[in-house]
Amino acid sequence: MTARAADRARYDRATAHVDAPVAIVDLEAFDANADDLVRRAGGKPIRVASKSVRCRALLERALARDGFAGVMSFTLAESLWLARSGFEDVLLAYPSADRARYAELAADPELASAVTVMIDDPAQLDLIDAARGGGREVVRVCLELDTSLRLLGGRVRVGARRSPLHSPAQVAGLARAVVRRPGFEVVGIMAYEGHVAGVGDAVAGRPLRSRAVRLMQAAARRELAERRAAVVRAVRAVVPGLEFVNGGGTGSVQHTAAEDAVTEIAAGSGLYAPRLFDNFTSFRGRPAALFAQPVVRRPGVGVVTVLGGGYPASGAPGADRLPVPYLPEGLRHDSQEGAGEVQTPLLGSPADDLLIGDKVWFRHAKAGELCERFDALHLVEGDAVTATVPTYRGEGHTFL
Image (tube, rainbow, N blue to C red; front, side, top):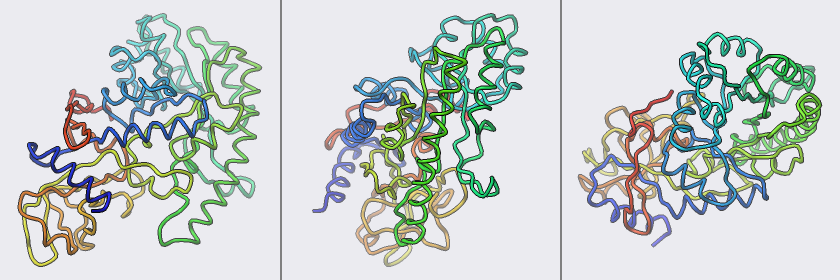
């Protein structure tokens, strides 16, 4: 029996009492992935990216381990909810226009001390001030640096379109604007190199593309390391008490951690190890989060149909955004139908051994987005479910 076949047998036994659709997290794999992130971070703390987990119980499990400290959230409403739930260090990774939540933040000293918001434009400060509604608490802010690699005088850009702040002078200029403005305090810098941390460099069957990605990423790492260090020096000249410099993601942990200017690493997807992270040469995660759909039809030889399963991930549309059948090994999507809203046909010889009601286990393309489809995660240890915990959705929250 292969290792994957053994996992399938364990998961089927563990969830025999639970009808599919069902989602699980294999805690042995989750913990092994957490250990690998810590190892690659080389002693620098990892801030857990909540959008990649979306389950309070598993955020708490990660933060209880040595090497993890703080949460990186994705909306202001989520940030306040986490802070009220006892998370003491929450960094909002994206600017917000949630006026009602800014009013709450500015009026509550405990929330104001626990939550740091993201800015890259003075207009965001204007919005926060206009939303205060009489709240006088100092708002902690983090400045986001654009990490994109710009070539040919800026005519070629590689990287996500995020912050407009690219140079040390631009970031330091915004820091000075914040320092001059009552009611705000600069406490950190963030720079997420998604073109390194989130793009695989070993795509199966595409050796030339993979080599091009590796060359691009090597150049991007060198350029960003120099520029990020210069940005930190420029900002520290304005804000000597800067608390943190956050960088990286699951795919770049060891590279970002090697930079002296960086004080902490952001990562979250690596805990679940979704399929988009199969294409990295620098690490290999263990699939920890899976979901199962039940077989409901047997249309013919070599074909079964499962209920639902059309859970595409965000990003540019493509086959790499679809969940993939994982267990039993050897199943594949029908290219004419793909992953469907209410049913998904699967092809391959293993289909002939599947019966009505059997489970087919899938891996999602991305990490936390799986939790928007399920209200609970069944936590598996060995061949038993040892706990069932709610996702954000299960607690009544769909933040974005």
